[in-house]
Image 1 (cartoon, helix red, strand yellow):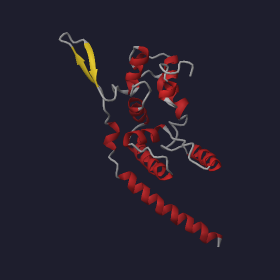
Image 2 (cartoon, helix red, strand yellow; image 1 turned 135 degrees about the vertical axis):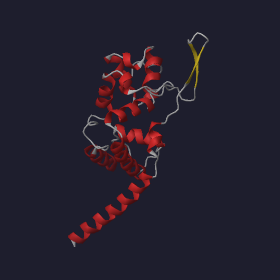
Image 3 (cartoon, helix red, strand yellow; image 1 turned 30 degrees about the vertical axis):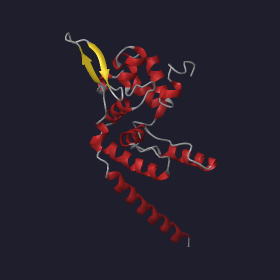
Image 4 (cartoon, helix red, strand yellow; image 1 turned 180 degrees about the vertical axis):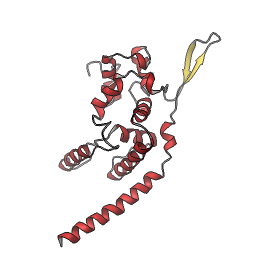
Length: 208
């Protein structure tokens, strides 16, 4: 009887896995690298005098981001980023236990890759179904992009509060310097904003 129950559970798991894997395959991964950026306006002397944007973002390559920032983000958001395949299984187990005890989804245990998947394809609803699609999509992203490229895309896409999307806009907006020139303290502050960017923005909550 126990063997039959285990077999049925594995069959059910296989069916669900196939279903969500197929759903994840419907997403176009080229969209991960596509993001809205600001149009910069220059005067006749080549000097910047304004920007036009819906999302204030200036994408930059990985080598134009201060080396300490990816390390700070890894420490704050996903300390096993360079070890996992897109999903932190132990983190999911801890979150599942916490959610069961609370009777609702209060923790997500999302990796940087999962956050990139969610933000790229607007997977916002707090449901277990969305989480499963997000996991399969994260595995696809990990198979198609290097870790550094995933971190680069994440840092260029993520919201840092106060209307700043991406690390370059945040570095210039908060510190009046490009992302490549951020010091350790500034990198730590930007990484800390990711938990709650609007609530922790120094413009709104300097103590926080």
